[in-house]
Image (cartoon, rainbow, N blue to C red; front, top):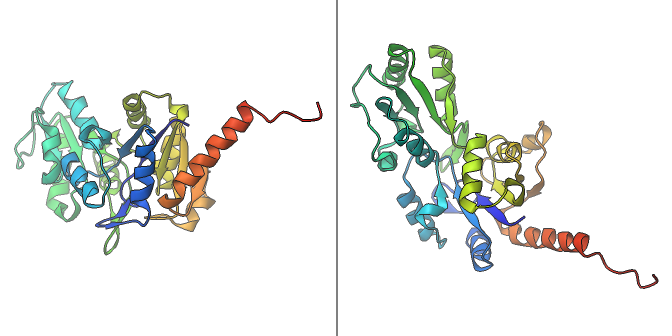
Length: 275
């Protein structure tokens, strides 16, 4: 392994609280010049705000070291100017869609793309119904999901994420969503391209058995599951087998060094002194 992908929520912090050892783990990879990215399905804020949040916790990241579904989807939309997009995205993340033609917030028709992110408490029946009407008004419209995370751990407990709302719209509008974000293989390929490494030389570290571990493995990467964030013991009883399970991010540097040592022994096995 030569590169690593860090999830954010549940791995480096829980909502507004840093996880013990996160700073030291990230700093260890930075000081050892190991290529790394921060990949997250967070769509409730833009990259600049995520950089600021990491800095508050003592973890440095450049803007281009953070990959989010908003960034990937906006790049896709800017390259395909077939018609306007209706954005169901938190206002704090709208800056990532600069240069994308967008419909007014009250439009009930005319969308070529309907983009669904995590609106949190901004979801209502009226908001969902508007997205549904936009999809039905244009048989060629494309439903875009900014990640397919089912839930995440906030300060007050588990909260619904983007996937449940996307699935409801898929069912109602009889439309299959185009997914940007984990666990989509294209999202992981984009991360590998940014690191300029083959997928087989990259490890993904996360707390989600489906989005982080299964998604990464399907893309040809290693998947390291942490027992933090939204992890539940039942995650280990399903059909996905992580390449490693660690108690916390603080254990990652030691685990990484063990893998390097094991690889070195396989490449350069010790000479039998009796031969």
